[in-house]
Length: 511
Image (tube, rainbow, N blue to C red; front, side, top):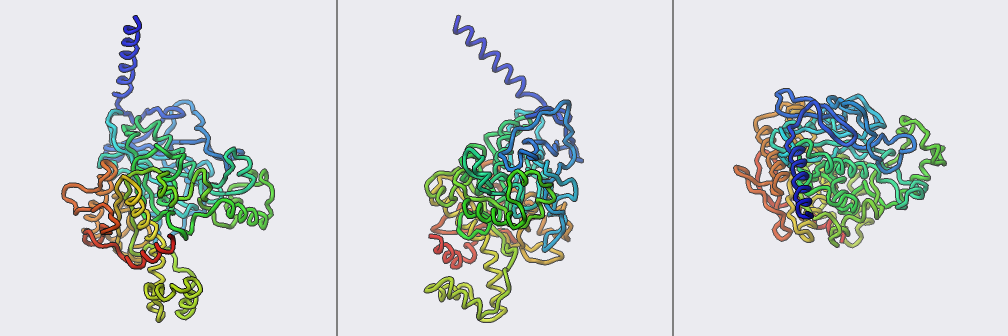
């Protein structure tokens, strides 16, 4: 009798699972955590698009500077057809090389901004397509998942489910403060934006099958602050098991001096002093201040190494306390976003003597400053390698301490048109995401060929852990003993790691 009951139970469970699993995906009605949603079809009807799906409760009022809370359920069918609010930030204004295609829509912008977007080509929930979750850049103070150049339609047409997410920014997402740490059972504060990213990944794990995605084949990907975030998630114990591959473009926090990540106690002290200078001494008052007023408080707010959400990144990798997943990473030939204060060659050399002491001669041989023209080139190289050292070191650490492969790239293509800032920071991702059509530049045939090649490498990696495929130049696994990169320029080819001697010097400073 027990066997019969067990067998009947199994049959019922299997039939129920099959009934749910075989459901066709209707753009007008998909069930997710919180309720039913309705999306829309792409213009050519091939991709189902859902924009503005809430993955956590609005982090407002008493939920400011709290870990993300569960979605508040809604009644009826929630329309998810238009861009959701970008999280509170300054209004988007083009600057440097970043035209409006790189910026958030002008509206809506709101503290109620924890939403994500999904593009899927699947017809049925059983298709188990690979998933890419894109984490936007913007220096942890700007950006959103609805930036035009992040549009997921083209990659979805290559057979994957694309998800873009929002997370808390600036003072809202990264305020470390001793009173906030005291009210937290884990005794830390400041990484709310990273916790939002983890909540979005948990949403993907629980819901992506409804869009034909495979929760056991998820790739996290991002550029600049998004790449820093990917690095944080790779080592975060709280993100364990939520993803299976990682793509990081121009960013990371494995090498000291990354400029964005600091220790908890020092940041808490700095923020207390900063808030006091702005007339704020009480946490309750801080939660009552309007979002616009908070936005005006000066200061740098970014991730902190707190030992709970984000441990010491390099140490976590070296000791195996991280997500050992395949890694695709790299940087751009003109990746620098600022050259720092202008100095004369003699002052630059004098500063080198102070900073590097007995190694100053070696440093000045690698980063020469004999005249102003040479110094400008050196400053540009230093700015580029601010990113390059992170991605090179990360690929090397993965090769040394991990069991999964790493692949390193170097992007050199200068987008045609003006303004010309070379192969600037952010220039590569529209090629990789196959979104050049959304970028107003006079692109040439070589650009469209590079777009097809790069996006195919990315999709191959997302699907199979290996970017290589038929008809593509061979992209070698990164090997510290024979360090090669794939170079993305007018020609795609495998070459020696650029600026090798400079990178080795910088690496030696971090031993």
